[in-house]
Length: 115
Length: 115
Image 1 (cartoon, rainbow over the protein chains, first blue to last red):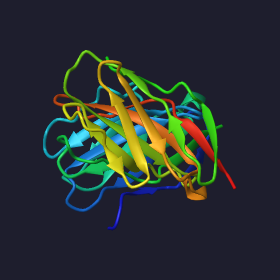
Image 2 (image 1 turned 180 degrees about the vertical axis):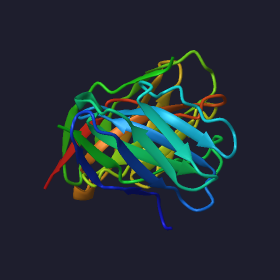
Image 3 (image 1 turned 180 degrees about the horizontal axis):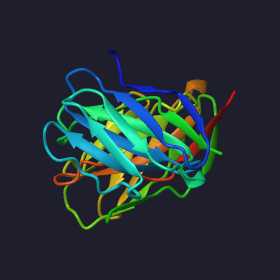
Image 4 (image 1 turned 45 degrees about the horizontal axis):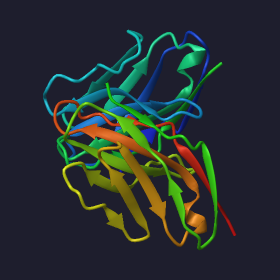
């Protein structure tokens, strides 16, 4: 596709439910990133995938958060037993190789609201 | 760990005037990259300009330029001839030269352009 796409655009869920957020990176990009943006804040790194290497999960805030990526394509971020503090915009980005000086191209994000 | 600070939560400028957004960062590394991203209401992060720390020359992209002061760990963004379409959140970001590929973001500055 022309750019990074994410779905759904908005998601409202009840506390305690599980949610899945999807990211489709730019075709040919081997690196994929997930970030979280809380209201009025900058982006926080969550997880990074590069090709077939083990993902960098150092930014995941708790074991309720997990992410998968199939090859060099779609990625899914899963939040189990959602809490109100999980409410945020979740942004995905991709780049050609993940090595500097690659530019990260961002998707429009998924706004998650936990009631 | 690296940190990025944007001390101006909000700024405003008159159309056609010039505005400067501030950014400071803290790092013990000598090689790194710095970025300014723009986030309009659509939420999609757009790369405005990037600077390699090893380059002494300040980066410029059309109406956008930076003032990179490595010793002071300062990286300000100057927008000349401001346009209504420049109104957005602006985020300063840091990326290590090697090792972690994640971006470390500041909290952002909301720029309003007045007609």
